[in-house]
Length: 301
Image: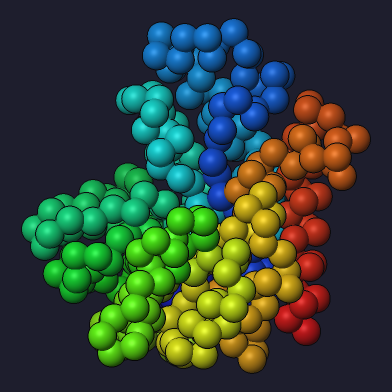
């Protein structure tokens, strides 16, 4: 049995890529040649047609970037809003990603108390028809809301630690009586809990989400946590750059993947890649992924 985190690290090394491609189909940003604008005038009525368009969009993106990345990350909210057709599209997207030998990180921030957390873990990590390798979770409920996601050591969980959104400071930066911030305490909790799930690579199946938009905190958290692997969102559209994420890696350039969703999915809308045109959105996405991969690799040399 190979631990999830070792599978991920192996893929990263095979691809020489530390990027994660988010699959977040913002409907209003999709190219007209894939999704007709008139379908968006009544989303509820047109769920099936829209979901079919999203699947085509995702499959073409996956084809374009499969050799550039080890992992893709569908964000569940964009599929859930399309009802049953949207969820079918999500499962089909995951299945297609698996045919390309990609690791799938399902972004759903799921959690609840023990038995319900167990049901979530079973639904997403044990369902062989879905094929998800890992999932994002909220650690706020404590260990009985985390451990069910770690029972299968071939699967992984990414717990929210220091998120990339502007209002993260409202709660995550609050000071505790012992002088730590809330996010520092969560980091200690995740590292301690994850020590029983360490892979051969030295990192744990219990990973963490740490945003690129707070590079100072990212550096501090990396020095605090030597066995916690990071998913670093916030690159590109949210403002984070290669220099910002460097501190999230260890001295060997390991220990993290960096996510970009809109910056790759909708690269054709950026001036830099506009020459591709909407009809070649997948080629634009590939160019953006290639640039991101190179920028991160270069900054880690």
